[in-house]
Image 1 (tube, rainbow, N blue to C red):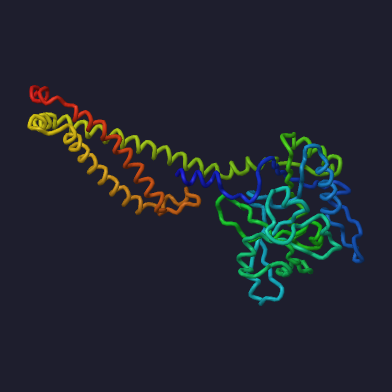
Image 2: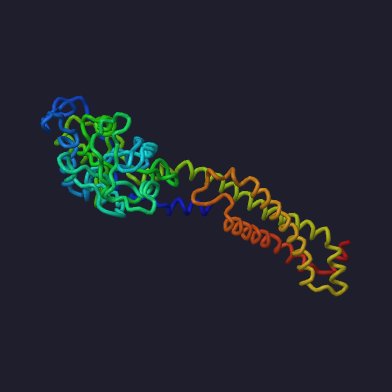
Length: 389
């Protein structure tokens, strides 16, 4: 249990949660915002809300006093908002349509804001717009799963399946370190990050990712009233948006692990009670045995037995009880270990080191419990013991 708690505290999140706040912005049906259509190309396709609203808002947020950086992310870590999509790697067989990953739209400065390292290549930046070559960044889990032993940079990802209306392939320009997804300690799924301004307004992904609530992350240099400052920035740049769900990433991590921690604390409390019962039980049993054998001890000492011999006699009895108890306890633990799997994090149910440490700890507790009755038995005056009988 302590091993699991330690692992939870030191778990790799994939981002720096200090002074990091997330919130959502939801567009209202205000004139000039949700229905704005500006000619963007020869086909008169509407300009993306990312270009006309989100990017200007980000620029304003980044100039707020106390803000170190800010970025848009449609599916922040631990939010479980990512949408899953099939994709194909251009140049591979058609069976690659079975490949799937979580899809998110991000703005520039995302990796720096989150404190997530870029392992290869570069991160998406604000210069990746609809008029530049389409690029994407994948996480380490995707690179490991679908490009094992190969360099993913330069490979192209096709998202045009299932009539998504994504007509252009995206070139992989970077590999981002893994971030936790739904749960701390859970499996990290393959993820594809797309520039927010390179998602065609005619695609299904545009509707799913950018036309509803989107997430923002803000890194501050200290404690500032983030909610008030962000609402002020949006009132000036995008008054038709409603902001909600302000939460620091530290709070998100604590909330995400609350159930696991609570279960561990409860089980740990029962385990501590069990250890206390072991101590009290052994002490009581051996004290009673020493009392029953008081006359015998007096006779042994009258016949020449040393106090060390008497102490050894009691210690031997206690050690036999401890040995049998540990043997039975370890056997039962081995048989029921799989039931504790849901409480563990980065600890195997049959972890040999943990079993050995627990056995040693219980043996030490048991030895402490039997030392006191052994010392009392060794201090018996043989004349007093014989006279009492």
